[in-house]
Length: 181
Image 1 (cartoon, rainbow, N blue to C red):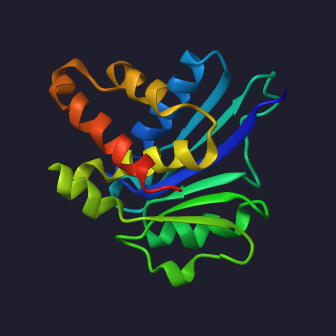
Image 2: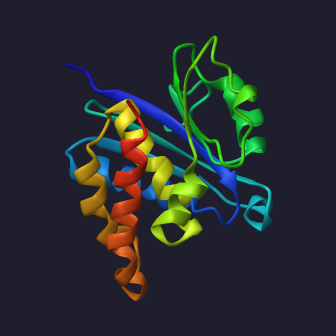
């Protein structure tokens, strides 16, 4: 059986977009899947829309370039505005409803999962973990990798200096996954 999913992950520079893209890629790799991960660096890192792409498959990946992704994680409104039109019909879009008006989501064409990521992260103790909440929702909504694989991969993508934050990040991932039916 063929396993394949690709995603654009986008938000403001500083929201941890690259971190969760790297985490997703690492978890998929640790799960025995083929992966490509491309971060987009540049002026976006200073408050504009930063993004990365992740392709996951159990077969060879022909190209890491994504023109029409199957999924999107949009952590802010500019990201939703820019990338939602590119998502394939029926694709999964995780929307940070803390920062994005859900009426802007294309519910006619896409499977929209609104997640109040900032509020959930804040209730766990750190609003900066909103990215982890969104990734947790993504893992549940797509099923491309298991939540446990992502949680176990935290130690590989979070620097040793911040290793004390791994349990809270794992909690944020789980809280995000619980928002998806």
